[in-house]
Length: 78
Image 1: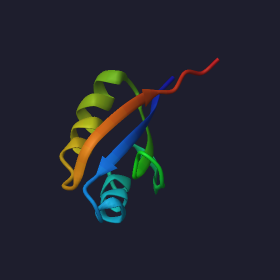
Image 2: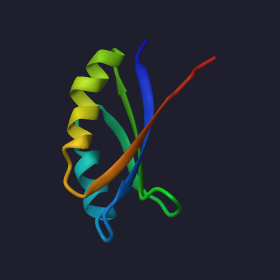
Image 3: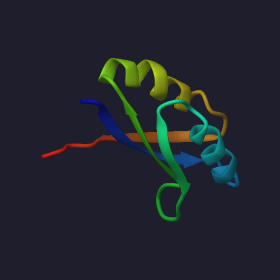
Image 4: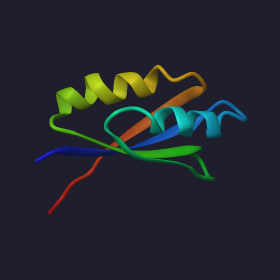
């Protein structure tokens, strides 16, 4: 079973498109889209474990230029 998360991203003004493209290219990211509202980009990612998610996906997302804030929301399956 894999770990899945949504990551809500706020960007610098005018950077949403470039951030969505950059994070969408990160291995483990299954979807990245620009949105309107309090966040500029929402992505969905999955990984075999939370540890690998942190090292492989979250660390790379946080290194993308233009991101000012992120909120990670783990997916709960029933």
